[in-house]
Image 1 (cartoon, rainbow over the protein chains, first blue to last red):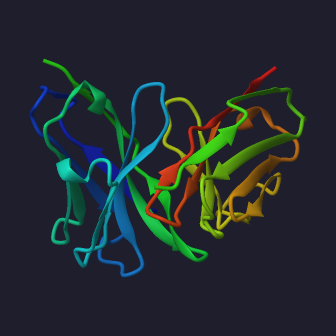
Image 2 (cartoon, rainbow over the protein chains, first blue to last red; image 1 turned 90 degrees about the vertical axis):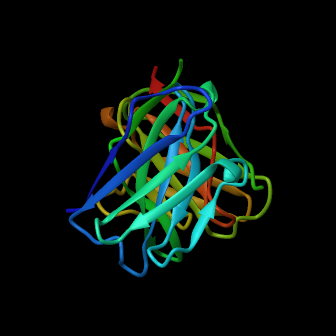
Length: 122
Length: 106
C-alpha cells in the first residue's frame, strides 16, 4: 500500500524559505506514469495546487507561485521536496504531498499524504 | 488560467436525500474533470475522474456527468459519512480546484 509522509518545520519566519519533504513508501517515485506534487490549504479555505514533478525532472508550477517555488525529486531516497521562498502570513496552510496517478486519460492526485500545517509567523 | 466555480456553496440535506453539486469552468476542460471529497482533518479523497469514472472503492451512489464547461456530481442517497466538502478539479490546463461545496446535515 502506497504511503506518503510529509515532513518539515511547523513554523517559518516571514521572508524565510519553507522547505518540505515527502517520503514515499510502498511504491517508487521512478514509475514512468506517475507525477508527484504539492497542494496546500489555508485554514478554513480551499485547495491550491502548487507544483508537480516527474522523476525525469519534468516540472510544472502554478503560475501564481512559480517565481517562489522549487520542486525536486530524490530517486535514491524515494522522496520529493518543495521549497517556497520569501514566505508571508498568506503562505500559512496545511501542505499536502500527493501522487498523480495516471487514471483514465490523465494524471489525477489519487494518493495524498496526511498534511502538514506550516505557520508563517515571527 | 481556467477558473472553476461551484454551486451551491452549502447544501443542507438529510440522510437519504439526493445531492446534486455543480461545477462550472471558465472555458472548456474537455473531459479532464475530477471530484474530491474532504472530511475535517483529512486529506481529500478522489471520487470521480474524467467526469464520470468512479475511483477505486467509491460506492455506486456517487456519479458524475457533464462535458465541456458544466459538470455535476450526484450522490443518489446520502449516507451519514457523505456529509463533507466536495471539490472539483480540472486537469486540462495544469490543476485548478473549485472553491468547494459543503454538504451538511439539515
